[in-house]
Image 1 (spheres, helix red, strand yellow):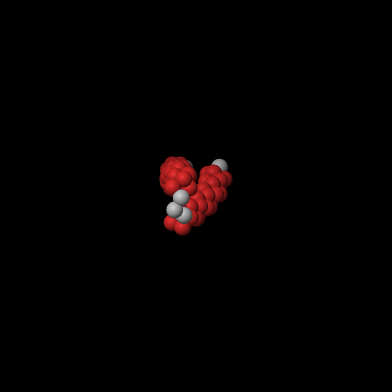
Image 2 (cartoon, one colour):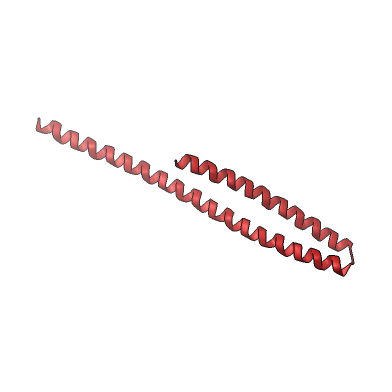
Length: 103
């Protein structure tokens, strides 16, 4: 389950990362166009688009941060489960040793 979830999160992370790169490229293109154009109307139109893109970037960056955190938590859970399994095995071995000594 954790492995599947981790793979899904990594795939989603890659998708979002690609979206961020595309939005950064769009932002750069819009800024380049604005510097080449002196039309106030175009400037205002692209300024609104830029604000939208920056908002989307902010949202996607936050989503990436949360995915990173989720992956880290899943790794911690995996480590804890392994520790519990080892502890269970150790306890069972001690129980078996005590039973063997009684016999």
